[in-house]
Image 1 (cartoon, rainbow, N blue to C red):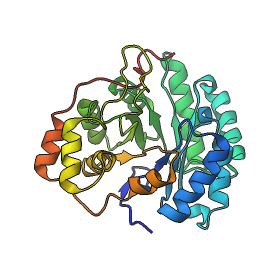
Image 2: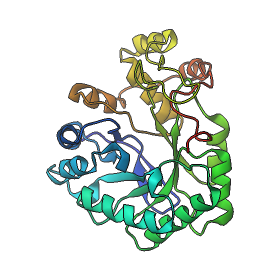
Image 3: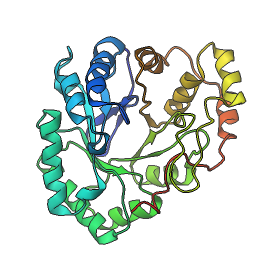
Length: 287
């Protein structure tokens, strides 16, 4: 099995620093790919969400793998239509039923949306789930500094993680620093910059990270792929990273990133690629 490092969370648990994302993966494919990722590639961290429509497949993939459930770090997320205390609690139960488990290792609010009072009521529902032990850790997805501060001012349980769009073209340095100061881990979605045509949301742009000349040059110098360079960049920056693929060969390649290390010069060259351009939507405009 690949020895993936872990990051300690403020919940008292720890998360494997590299996992498999399954956004846009059909349910039947999710079962097969999750099982392959666990049994053949050595993953122990799977990230899904209600809106992905594949919680059942993910659950089946974990259940039919050769690895016990307690050795898998499983994340799912609360969708926007389920904000509010009662709706959030009911939606969590439904996710557990689809996943075929009695707990998740991490439960996230998928988007903060625009109603701060309802957002905080939703957070308090997650705090209840955490106190019951059914969500071993709780956190946020797509939270800006303002959203983090809203929760930190009202919380009984601090967010363990903020999962945000983050890649070499959108490095989120102020958010990362703010989270670090408050003991919140940062997890990167679209860590490879998305696909070539994946731009969505106002003013977003399709991904050009993997075609970047600097990334390609660094990859050639280390005899690895551009994707492996970018994943390694996330790891060496202390980020949790969840690259997504529906190809078994790429799933295996994405976790094969512990046989090389980026140099300080490599890291400086990648740091210079930050354009501040998103691939996904701006959390302040999602409603």
